[in-house]
Structure formats: C-alpha cells, structure tokens
Length: 172
Image 1 (cartoon, rainbow, N blue to C red):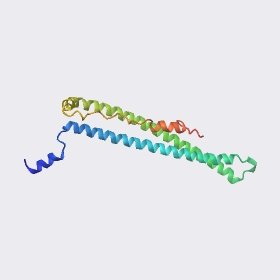
Image 2: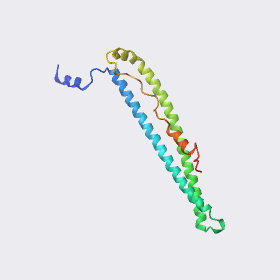
Image 3: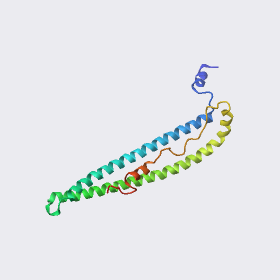
C-alpha cells in the first residue's frame, strides 16, 4: 500500500460508515442551531430586562415629580414631567417591538423545526438498516436523531411574558 493512501486511512475512524459520519454531522449542525437560538433568546431577555429597568427608573422619577403639587412646580419640572412621559412611551413601544420580534422568531423556528424533522425522517429511514446491522457489532454507539427543539424549560418569549406581561410592562 502506498504511504499517502495509508495516511488518508489513518485519519478516519474506520469503524464508522459514511452514512454514520453524515448523521453525526447533521446532529452537530442541529446542536449548533440550538445554541444559536438559545443565544438569541438570552439576548431578547437581556434587552427586555434592561428596558424594564429603564422604564422603572423613569417611572420612579415621574412619580416623584407628580407628587409635587401642580401649583408648586416650576417650568423645568413640568417640562421634565412631559419628557419622562414621552421617554416611557418610547421605551414601552420599543419593548412591544421586542416582544413582537421574539414571536416572529419563535414562529420561524417552529417552521425550521418542522422542516428539520421532515428532513431527518427522510434521511434516517435508509440509515435504520445500516445502524441496525452495525448496532449488533457496536452496541455502545446508538444513532438517535437530534431533538427537533431545544430542551429549554422556558423559551425567551415565555420568560419575557413572565417578566412584564405579553405586550406591556406590568410595572406600568
């Protein structure tokens, strides 16, 4: 056997069939997608937490100004009160857009999950015969299909809803 050919063979695990390698690559790609989704959910949650914090801070300042009797307020205080109302309104709108984006993302992910499940179902049918025949010789290696959804107790959207309500912050 020529030396170059021996090097190529030694780089691969010879006990795995090409179909099994392809299946493992699909599983790894699916895991990568799950991790990217989780990162996206965490970013949504962090943005939501920050928006809620900003809204609470502005609301507290507004309450302090509202507590002053109207006759005792100077022009700057009245302007600041109006500014705070506008800022709170903008932040609530921004948060509503965030929740809407999270919902659109969730629906897109559901569609991707369905497409991936269909793809895996088609892809794994021919592999059933291959893995059953090789499973008897290698019982410790099992070809389970990857999960079609991330196994997270709550999605980012559910956590956002729990935090401040579906479309409007409960602190409002």
